[in-house]
Image (cartoon, rainbow, N blue to C red; front, side, top):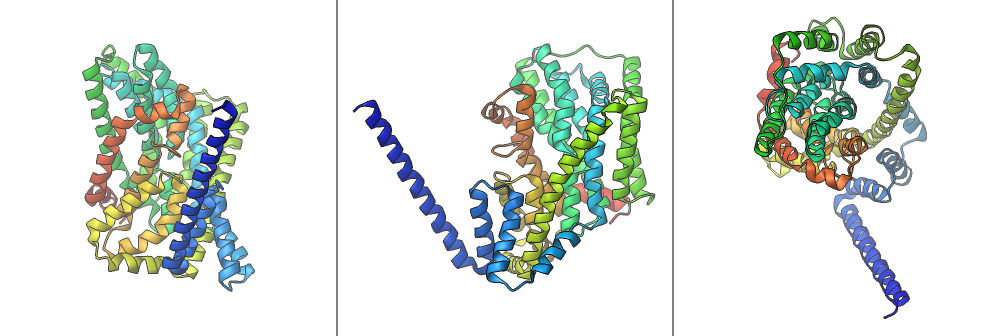
Length: 463
């Protein structure tokens, strides 16, 4: 067979295979429409648009418009009004403010001082620099609220240092990818704000509820790292003196004080979580520019521009998701889904298992904000009717989002780490596996141990 003939046969086979896939997908979507009624039509439309490669935010908006114009009699004015009224909530202001605070902290030298402090504490252990990276990620997560910012701030410093000390690059990347996910579990967290807005849950309670789970995950990731480092004989550092530790703490204390401001302000009723976000942004600006002086004042417009760009992207997703929620409420879909789930008699344990599987699958095709905005209004009513606490349910969803950030095809932490390490996504996917399995064990613990999440907000009087 000639080269041209062989190429033509491959093209024909590819076309046949593509046609078979298209027919199969169309048949599945049509079946969903027929079996699910209006619920099936809504989700079939959404899946069909997402399969074309359209961004999730646009797919949500188009789904709403197509369904309402073709299958309902909702006036156009109601849709336009919902677009504006849906994002008028005061709590939404916390999102751009926490993004701004995170960017100031990233550029202001806070991360490198936290790394130095963590290294002085445990750098002499097996895999000391890797352990210090995890501890530094946890400390940065306490004041940041974004996993991507945590990976950038800590990873860009600690990963080159680990490679220089003789650690395999894959090992260092695996540590940073998973430890960076702590950014959305500890105190302030953008996904927590989005969940709170979607389900009318207390933001302050959610912030505090993530603290103990975050500490537990930090310990578990450190344990996995220590075992692997000891097994492979990875480098240890010189043990720091108490004087060196005191100096490192003194250098990092300005950044760590932000934790005290957030916890103290919210629990004492001095300010709301949204106002805490504003305080964080102002405080981060002051210590970055005037205390540490690592960020020149002239760089402020650039940081503001980056923060505004990311905020606009998230608010655009939220706006379209608000429309989607409006459609679901208008068609009584959350209640219908809750009735269907309860009719299956899964019980609390079965429902939580079902929710975890659903969210882990969703993490393969959507990013955290979109998943929460679509899934939370559907799953939350069923959770409440089964007697599951809304705050515990929110932390469980947050833990699922952490796992989604660390695996392909849309794991944002992987792509950020790829840019820092210059490694391919496939290499990073293999590298991250030991810590990803640890995170799945952690997910089971968080799911079936509600006291881990609920004790602190109850003790602080926020529940």
